[in-house]
Length: 423
Length: 106
Ligand code: HEM
Ligand code: FES
Image (cartoon, rainbow over all chains, first blue to last red; front, side, top):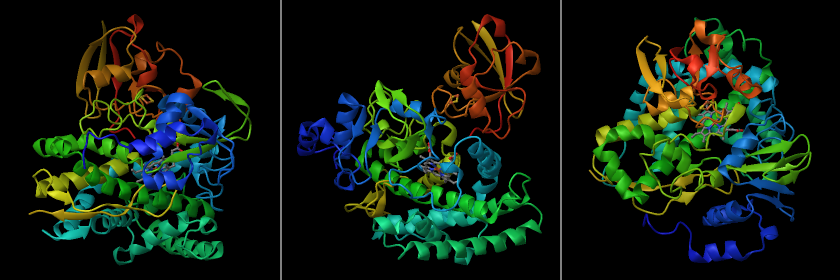
């Protein structure tokens, strides 16, 4: 692949530029799958950065916020743009389930809950985890086949994120695949065609098993001295030890789902990006310390969550547009992360940017991803351990086309990435 | 120029001289002082520029607005001396200011 080529085909650009503005509906998984969505976002940022889609979209009428600075404005006005009134995704109902989670709460309830759970991923806690994380990561890498093609997503990205969850919860090691399953079940929505579970009842039944399992772990740990795993911390902290079972389940799901697909897809997307930009791969091998600034750039580049949604609680204006109470407002992180007014050469993957953490992939404001330092740590450890083992540019080679994950308007990621380690 | 001293969690002191109007976050980031991240670039939207202001300076700082208060509210290690570094600008009145940075920002 060629790093200097325009990111979209000229046909896609032409189409995106010729369709009447009021006909544009960016919430169309076809555009995401074909990779042409960027051409539409480019146009909206230029011509109509806060765009109303009134037409018969799958998700009803909605506003698209496409510029970096306007997205920050929405993120920092939680009393106008609510996470609670309609949930946080363009599709009503997903992720919200029947379980209370602070990602879809407004202040003051949000703040209380987040404050209670946030020490579980504080820098101090992470420092305790890093050693074990590094050891596990090394073991996974040492087990990879050399000089033959394998699927990086299965062998590295999924394996590592599952192991990390098990470490975080100090979950019985041999049963750790349950965590990945619960993550998939929790974020599945059978109504919109997901085949992960058959029905909502089936989903709730599986989540009931999840709660029962974790209740057992809670009971074990509350009777033991405090440790640095999530369950022990929740059970012992004065702020969380009196949670109702439903609140406990909500927090568990949020922590499991929040960090699973997103981190996994960054682990795959990072390797793909380095292969698409071989000069950056070379830079990295010459100066492995660049891992520190590469990690946030990977997360910007991948933008694992395409958007988050808010609902207006009152009439307001945004960038000169009149937004009405009750309107659905979509912050397209994928667009803001490619905004040339905020990010220099946004369509290029550059591992030594001066301010690499200025990206929208974690959101901003009071809901800014609570696990952001944990996600960065996992990806940093992965690359540090890779570079200890394979030191040459393009030594981990992507040898075929990646396959995107099943249709999703929220997650951006890969099901397979054929790779060969040339040793 | 205004002198500001950053003291990190292991008590290492770093002095910087910055022009009036620059925020404490920018003062740290531009001078490669560790302990302050400033992920949002100073728009009061990330909370990764948290500092503890030395007690004798607390009353000399301009009061905090609602948004700074809200963002600080999510920081687990907040105390009475806590401020967000991007919301405090260097000024003559603060010459010699001493602030302590936490063990990590997140
Ligand atoms: C690269 C990986 C990740 C990405 C891209 C990501 C992205 C996001 C985004 C966009 C939000 C919502 C921001 C908003 O509504 O404004 C969020 C919230 C959240 N994330 Fe992450 N996340 C990642 C990893 C993790 C991990 C590893 C955890 C595990 C602890 C986690 C836990 C959470 C939680 C608990 C929230 C809710 C925060 C709140 O509402 O206050 N995330 N994340
Ligand atoms: S730099 Fe983000 S809140 Fe200060």
